[in-house]
Length: 294
Image 1 (cartoon, rainbow, N blue to C red):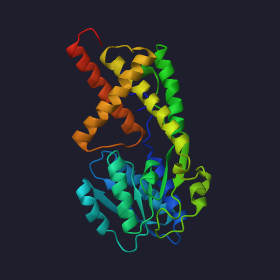
Image 2 (cartoon, rainbow, N blue to C red; image 1 turned 135 degrees about the vertical axis):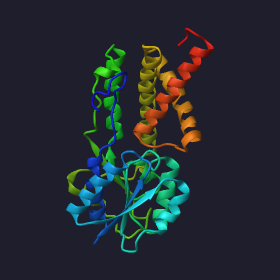
Image 3 (cartoon, one colour; image 1 turned 120 degrees about the horizontal axis):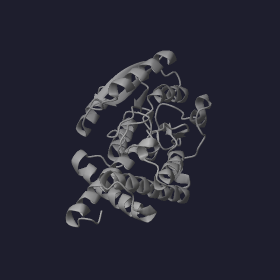
Image 4 (cartoon, rainbow, N blue to C red; image 1 turned 180 degrees about the horizontal axis):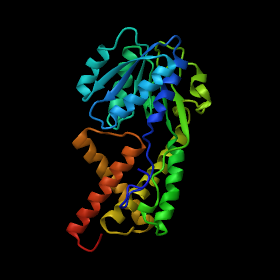
């Protein structure tokens, strides 16, 4: 995975080893927790590995799991109704579909309705109304991505740059008045085990958040545009050209993914993938309409 070949490089946010840590956060936040429901997309090829790692982590924490498999939005309400009464919390396993914007809102609303403290990977889940998230620090990933872009723009072949995993992670939790579930939602849950940053809810700093989102969006455009140019034409288009291709590709790819797969939003990987796919399609269309321009 570190050297997939061709013109592929970047970062992977799929880190199955974090499932046990997320369970640990839930156990810290929910007094006397003994049973946890685990929501998983059965169509995800990584689901078996994620389940295995989660089950291993639950054993070490003395927790019993109820696995909830789902594959469509229509099935989510029925799946929540099947949760055993003794279940005291919900863990959502990492997945592009479950982590998309619409699904996060739906899952957070159902969790609140069933009074289930819920943990997910992406901080956007907390913004959607969920209780907690624990996953890679996206800002740190994009700062490191800029280093990759710099190497590519200076002539390094993407295939020669190893794919890296995140090394910094962040925990985020909802304010007590945002999700009245079974726990007291202690602030210290964000630093359980000494592995997370104690942070306030992101909406307390909207200006800072908007600035960070803009920077991340620009970096996604640069990376997607640079990679798409090398895949389609074997070269980039300079920083401004790569940015334009990547940004337009992000809008095009986001629209295509929403129409084809119902995926809206999502984590870092989904955002970069949609921008890259959209940029590649854009460059191919330009080559067909105006040969020699791309």
